[in-house]
Image 1 (cartoon, helix red, strand yellow):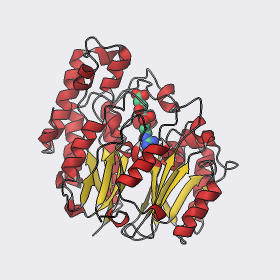
Image 2 (cartoon, rainbow, N blue to C red):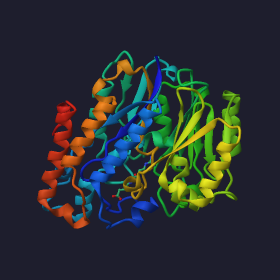
Image 3 (cartoon, rainbow, N blue to C red):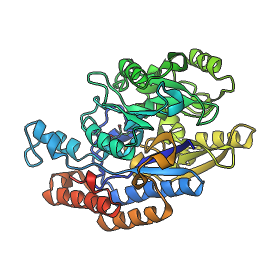
Length: 417
Ligand code: SUG
């Protein structure tokens, strides 16, 4: 049976605040702060447990090998010699944000009836541009069953692709044919538009989508300029529901009309700027919630603690769930370590609609496997990392052996360096 499965990236042991993402306000603001990798990973695992408790199917991806010496070697350097910028980039744990790992088109949408996945090239940010080989290796392992899955190579540069964070799928139910919306950026100065239209169009072609059921929509320049470096900071979709800020899209009426003509049951829940400003939207990550269908019916939002702490946002949400709409429940997850780098609940997960039995079971999560991962993280992940620690060879060693301990414990040693 086709089910939605959320695959979360486990926060890697090198998680740190290096201020690497221009246009991501949290990343810039927290540059130089001391990070807490162990807490960060435990917070992420606790979110996965919450999803399990809600009766959802949960998967995970492993942290990548850091420092990425192979990447530095291609640049003619190594950790000892590299400039601080390259050293930070080589140590980044940014693959935790699995919404940027790939774009996924489930089987009911594609011409060959398989689920198609394309890893994102992430070329706009140097520290993320070397994630895709490690991502591709995991996708090839987790979704090796070629009767069910097709895995593509990333779109070639210079066309920037940031994956599912800029992709929304609408459908009556997860296992019925969808309408896929690819959101690209073009303006947004002084910040870069990280998702290019040409990359979105390429992914749609590669996945064999029906052009009639594929929409390319432009993100509004003001959203990017306000700090929405991905569409999933201002909008989220689930089945027939679009939950979005009024200023998310350049031509919102056109988008809603295009969607409605393809999916008459569409429900748009739009938050007006007069209730929640773009600034509060970015600070709270209201739309970076996971919007999920509960097994008993009805939908729930899994929100970051910052949403509850932002008065305009929480007031709006309480009023919404008090009404008669499709979103019935609010759940809050403490993700403050990831949030301080601009990564909320939805950033940490990649949605795949598939039959769980067609997936390598080592990538699926159970309460026991969560216990095991928590134990390994508690024992091996560094408690704290300050920016100057990133130059210490002892930390490089700790980070490598922590990841290897996790891969050993979860029997995923094929991924070891
Ligand atoms: O790409 N932050 C990530 C956050 C990604 C959030 N993902 C989604 N919205 N789907 C980024 O900007 C900061 C790393 C640092 O500064 O050390 C960072 O890469």
